[in-house]
Length: 195
Image 1 (tube, helix red, strand yellow):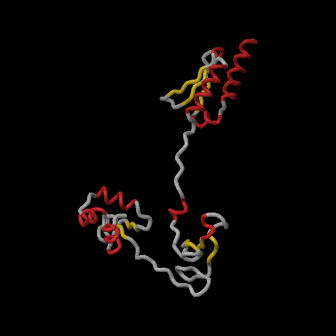
Image 2 (cartoon, helix red, strand yellow; image 1 turned 90 degrees about the vertical axis):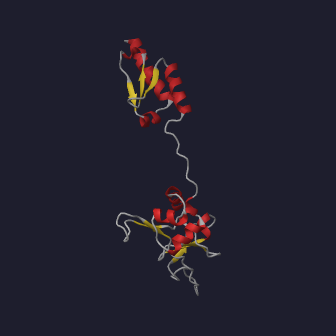
């Protein structure tokens, strides 16, 4: 967070427009900076103006020097290990009263953003390589598999189905395998050949 913005929010509560005017920045820049700070307090609506949201930073809490085994922040004896030994939180202590987590050895507070890690990239339900394998399996069995964009469904047809077609939603299509789709085509083609 920008140091001027941090100083302003530590000294008083302010709205986005107030911050922008005080710092000489745009409201968009202010909103971007506000999103970057975890400890930011947001109150909506404010007591000053019922239609305005105000932001401020709480006063930094100094750790309490514990005289014995207890929480560094509130001196409570209700503390426990935050995780298993050998993991990231294995060297951390969590307080049952104030809810803070801190490094057992250095005493530094561990923020929730440090423990969450990196967000995983969303994986597609039907990746292209799986779609290609399913289409090839259906074509090898003598059928046709296509995607109807308007209906947002997969459509499978075969020469002996007399206009009948089988449809799949994206979720249903993701549960099918190339072998299961090929087998569905083969069963109908075999029955048509026999009868």
